[in-house]
Image: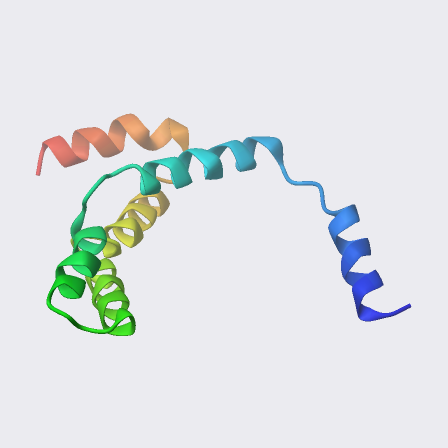
Length: 99
């Protein structure tokens, strides 16, 4: 058996969790659908100045890395960890309101 056969066996055995797959699909849609955001705008702005493609893409990736753009996703994941369970959501919301 070669590596290709082993890889195909692993693919054939993998069965994704349907609920998790649905959530990931939803998250990808949210990420994709926010029009001309900071990182999306950075590439054409840089490109219009005459830089090469690699520089324009590096600028877009740099914009995505910022804490107010792509880095915000990390903050959301941290917040979800702090909330814990569905039952803890009301208490978390009240805590945020009372800050």
